[in-house]
Image 1 (cartoon, rainbow, N blue to C red):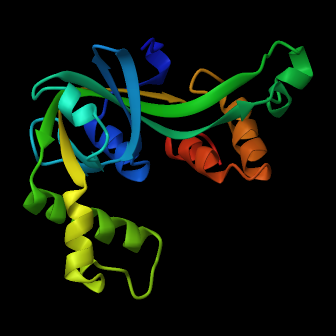
Image 2 (image 1 turned 90 degrees about the vertical axis):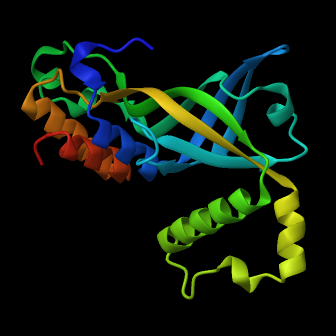
Length: 212
C-alpha cells in the first residue's frame, strides 16, 4: 500500500483502536483459484502476540478453511470513516482557486499468519466474547446472551462454524485527514463534513488535531 509520509499511522494503539472501532474486516487469501476476499467480523485480542491476534469464524460450508493451511500468509483490511472532500470547503479555494477534490479515509492493513481452529469449545468462547461486545455496543437491554438459546439449538449452530485466528506480523495504517493542508482549510473540511452528517470522519479529523 502506498502511504505518503504525512498520512502514515504508525502508533500500534491507534491502529488497534481503529480495528476495534470498525471490526468488520476483509480477509484476503491467495490459493489455487487465485485471490479471494472473505468479509467477516473480527475480535482483536491485543494481548496475544507482539502485534495482537484477530479472531473470527466462518461457516463450515465455506471451503476457505480446507483450502488454506496453518501458517499461510494472509491480509486483513479494516476500513474506518471515509468520505469525499469538496474544494468548496477550503477557504483558500475562494481566494486562489488552487484546490482540487480529494477523499479522506482511515484504513488498517493487518498482515499475518492464518490458523484454523476447528474446535467447538474455542468457537463457544469466541461467540460469547463477540456477543458481549456487540450486544453492549448496540445498547441492548437486557443484552442477548448465548444462554438465552436452547442448548441443542446452540450446539447445532456451533457445529456449523469453524474459527480462524490471524496472528498479526505487521500493521500498516493510513489516516488521510488533510494533514497537508493549512489549519483554516482543515477546519473548513471538518465543518463541511459535519454539515453533511459525516460526523465520524469529522471527529477523526478533530482527533488527529484539526481545529474545531
